[in-house]
Length: 172
Image 1 (tube, helix red, strand yellow):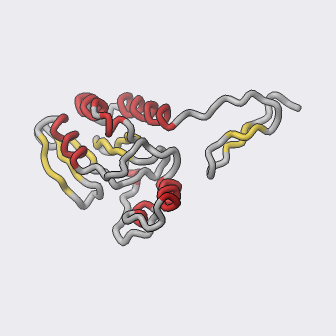
Image 2 (cartoon, helix red, strand yellow):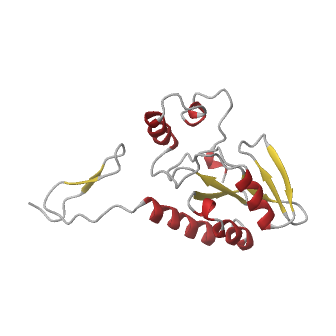
């Protein structure tokens, strides 16, 4: 058996399966994936450092997967694209400060003078099920949540059956 055989990563279960006798290194945990996301957000330079700092200081946001687009800071309940759009996001406001919008692009929460105020506005509007980010896609998250509580309201917004449009994640 070859020690250089590839590892197959099944998309459905996110587990590594060895093809031969090769060493099995563990997959990153959800926490590690989220932490790596925060590092990427900090390094990409699209969002003001003070906003990243304020958001990261809040434990309920720190456990979500962050992503950026057009200078905006978004938070997802899952780690894989197309991220969830059920949490408000923060964007820079003209002339300074911030503007909190969302969860959808057509929805507006309002202005915030400081990063801390903007973060507080997002926290006040977090879904009750905004627990640590789920490792997977929004569709996998919806399937997982439906298996826990089949008649859970709001599941259709995650699995694509909502009547409202889901904004594209590639607007970054």
